[in-house]
Length: 181
Image 1 (cartoon, one colour):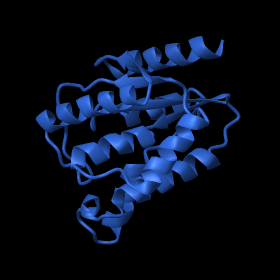
Image 2 (cartoon, one colour):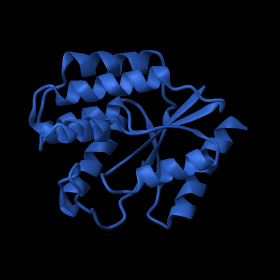
Image 3 (cartoon, one colour):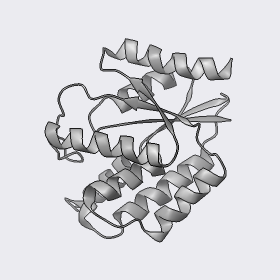
């Protein structure tokens, strides 16, 4: 099983790319942080990212989704990984928790994800949402932190440049198909 990661700044279009890849028959796994935020906000908590357990909840859901992901395809594409959670911890100025450190060790030692990570570049803007409350300039800082985190863990970043959705999907598909053919 080949597991690829889409990463990049919030609002770069990762989810749109992921949905299109699913339509093309690739196995996909959606972002855990968005699900953690949506569940908490659905229960009336406005800013779940401020609580201490937030990062560990993301890590737990990422691990669960990775372990439970079943697809007839030999390729899975993940909207983010625990390395993104490491970048989020750095961005928020939080220490790496035991749970996050253990998951980073697990994915590294077991080679869970392909070493090529698809870095979806920003689109030149960042639309705030209830789950994404950062502006464009902050998103650029976050993008750089993601790059640094992936490089620190030994991943090779493959640029997916800003473009229309069909071109970005084709670029991702090209990387994945090259590796699987």
